[in-house]
Length: 449
Image (cartoon, rainbow, N blue to C red):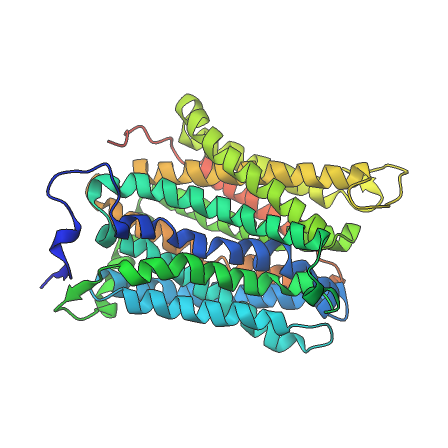
């Protein structure tokens, strides 16, 4: 038996240009996740964890890598199981609300990560928050066909992404503003700006997820979730795809590139803080630059795709990321792209090596946007038309299946070498291997309707 919405009158018989309350609220849900990624996983809390909470930067980078690696492994295990539940027709709202609650509590708890506390409980909170935000995203996406009319899905998908990026930039601006003029109640609290990343992420979850939970009409199902059937379907799709050499090489490229991206975006700000001593305000500026160029790359990629094709766009993106990562690897407190500058560090962003690092990050962000957009289009063109939904489920699974490997490797390398820098070299290797696999894919010629 199938499932139905609780209210049939939510969707108008005649198409309307106006969004329903449910559609408008859904467009905010992705913005509930983005601040956690920007503030906690990337630009503010991650460098604080590695550079201040830990006894040494190497220890901090290692534990951070293990925490994110464990989160990636948990997501890889949970995502297909919970995805099969979502696909079965069972209720979605309890799962979305549950993930949001876990993410909220984990994010709030980061405020208590004061200098001198044990790393383990903080790492557990980061692990829980990382898993919860990924599952929020998964169940939010699964809600789209339930919450929206078919003709509005494309509009809502783009609108949701745009709002999430604006909110992600907005919270970085809040950090920058508070850093410039801290309120009196924060002034005497140690590392208050860095620790504020958690509560800001939690507030975003509350603000942008609650409206949808209040107005959304969940599915009313008389069927039970079939985890076994969902996993069987995933296994069958993977087996079918693996027999096709073209699809097999594409999935390998997708999987390996996800590991490379996970390293670069999880440890870029950690490396910047270790190399230049950047604090929350400068790291927020760094995050704003990265996010801005990611958005620019997303829009530019759609234009470039029409001129060079999805495969070339993907390759260009991966190679830009590898080039930017190599530039980051060769830039430190004394060198710019491997060459000594003779200019010592002073106030933040006063040296050419710092600006070179910033520019390299911008190249990486634009390249990532190219690669993500191009590979998504390639999947739509390579997959059998009658099985697009199943293959995009596989595409999502493959992107998460081994994404724990990169951060875990960086953690092991930091433990062995005492530095996070060699881990960026691993990212470059992953990106080049992904490029080689993608190069072996025959360019899809079937056009998406």
